[in-house]
Length: 358
Image (cartoon, rainbow, N blue to C red):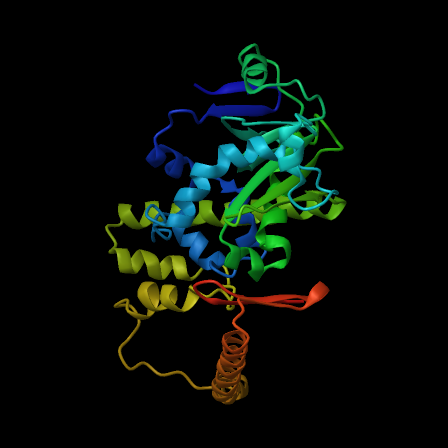
């Protein structure tokens, strides 16, 4: 049962079927979608997201992905431990603080999907609320909600878990999509707490944890609602096309052809875009067999550049292999596992070679 408190509507997620959650997710814009809308997501493009929201193509099936599985399993533990991490202190100081009962703040789960009439296109599923009051519990929050009082957090908590290699891919494990996600989650709370901010806690499987504070700028407050509303309007237009197409008894390919006239321009750097375009468009019947269009000067230059890049990649891959082999050989000769480069980082071998030099 939905609960309305002021401008905010809360939908309980406890015991909610995953299929119901996914269906609701496609009706709005979530925080995790925002990185794609701002072209920060290398694994998805705004074009793909458009067709996913319309149910025309399925998002990647992560149900058997081990990282997703353990990320979900560890979330509660990491949220609990994040209460003890001083993000300005030494790495992993939460362990010492936890053993001494030195809690920094209260971080509690919030088992509701949050929507606001001020930003109706956005739905927030936050990992937790943060309070300077160290005595606040999850039950306190639930009791407040059930009595019709909206909790006012000091900060929004986002939990991320990942492998060491994924963490090392980005500085401090901060995927570029994470900050915009937590900033989006802050929006519904702005009217309650204009100083609201976010904290992202990154836990790697080597048992290291880092925390990062994320502020909401005036540009964020302007652009996040603007970009998400524009995309939601496009989705609604797409739904109308599908509805009219079915009423006219058009085929799926014919409906997809109509949708292709309005879909947003793709982020060409998204790694999955090529497969998506091939499977969902180039193999469709409405693309005429052997149909030809005239190439432009830009097409010629891009074709030449693609060939040159291919040759460069071949040379660079060969050089990278040589460097890796040199490191392995050095470790073998010296009967060592680690090359310590002081403040620059280290090269180590444990099942595979890891180069972490900055």
